Length: 147
Image 1: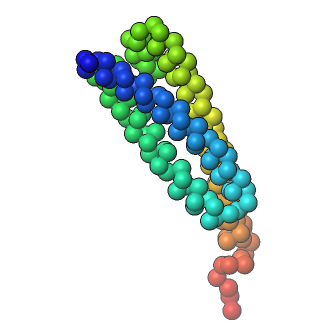
Image 2 (image 1 turned 30 degrees about the horizontal axis):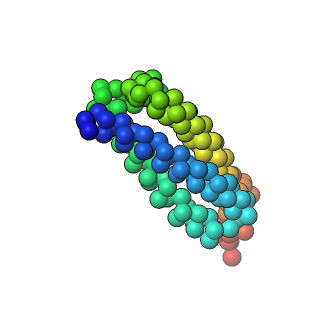
Image 3 (image 1 turned 120 degrees about the vertical axis):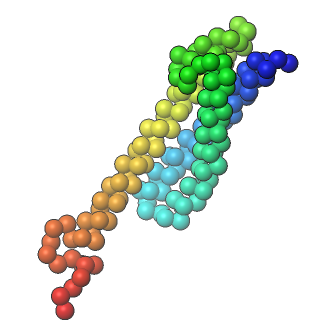
């Protein structure tokens, strides 16, 4: 098997693995949102521990994809990935292109859910900050008291 064929096989395998990983991450992000709404710190921590390996593996495959694109003299962007997919035989190219498009869609969904969770965390932080500082009041409940 040529070096080119080996690299193309890695891309194909990584796309399939990423589809699986994002499929696992998506419901975990939804569950994390529910736990954030419920202020369930223990469950949030447990979910983050479950998410970490999936996200690390996705990042590793993304970095590998970038190196493979570089090996073909391509940059890491959508146009370059389309050029790389065009290097596959027609029978593989169509299915792989559909998988790549699906991967982009599910990654976008995960990004949106992650941003939603981030906004919720920021709101929680602001509420806690207001409670602790008294939001402009002279005397705060948890601030320094003038005894």
